[in-house]
Image 1: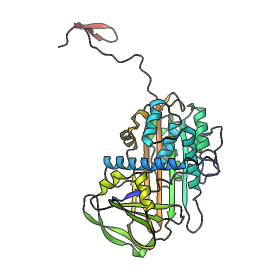
Image 2 (image 1 turned 180 degrees about the vertical axis):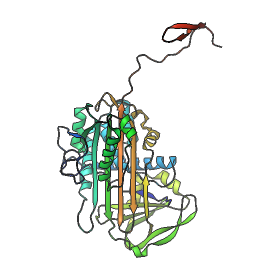
Image 3 (image 1 turned 90 degrees about the vertical axis):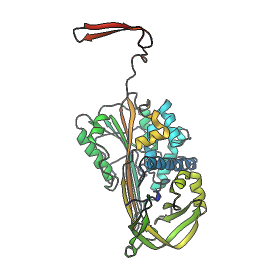
Image 4 (image 1 turned 135 degrees about the vertical axis):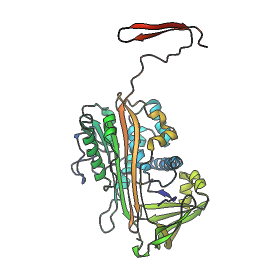
Length: 425
């Protein structure tokens, strides 16, 4: 099924990095089991009471980047999209903490970050803890879990201050694994770790080739599951017409019901918020008018989104028809980030992490299912680090004046041909 509804899967909310009480990444109390490999830790505990004064700035920048990313991915490969802007930002905020020079500047520019180091890190921590508080057990459970983990090849040194920053603000653990001896086994172990933390929805993010070519992988695994405040009745679901992106009308399974919704008409689109059982969580739907999808997508940012949400009216029992859907995606995140201006960060300097490492790629897989009961969504994002390219021993060679040339046989050194070029015309 193709679908052109712009889906904002809690991009302002799905950002927890660990659980309250976890100090660094996976611990023995993790319900999914410990991460594979030999565990290392930063020397600091997780900060459980971070400053919250800059949260509004972080949320604004998060929304703006979310639309930047969505537009970029859609332009490269139009069609269904499932992304986790937050999972990507959580990973890249940690990468940024070890970057310097052009690499850090490019990351800040791409993600629109304006906060200073401690303020940015504290804001991510505060957002994480606030969102994690939505976890609820019972008849209508809400699950939001996210874990950060570094997987590094055995014996590879990482910056102590960087590890402390990550353990303090992101709860990130470190696992040593032998990338070189058994890349397929390492990939399988990491993929199992990711699947365990995404409801078994994200599989095979890591390949043996990626492990063999890398020295360190920084992974965020994100999972969300929540029920609607008022579920749709399965008996009311029926095939209904849906106009896909090319204008063709198709028939798709569509939920129908009288549910609680906040909504408003904005310039060129209707916006609706369908609440989950936890009043602090919602699915936001932006439905462009016919023929105005590209225009609406181009104009969305944090300001227009907030203005539309502010104008919403509450409808206690609103008639809603909403297609069921299930999507999987693996967008080309590296190309999208380069298109957004982050090229200098790939191959850039990361002295805080290691003088011998550089960022080589960023990958993400996502999943979302929306049905009569609610929403399940998962994502995993991975930043790949490999050996830094060594500096050339001398500068560029510019042959722009008369020169001598030789054709030699190796290894005897016999000169087979020789000559001079004084005028190459």
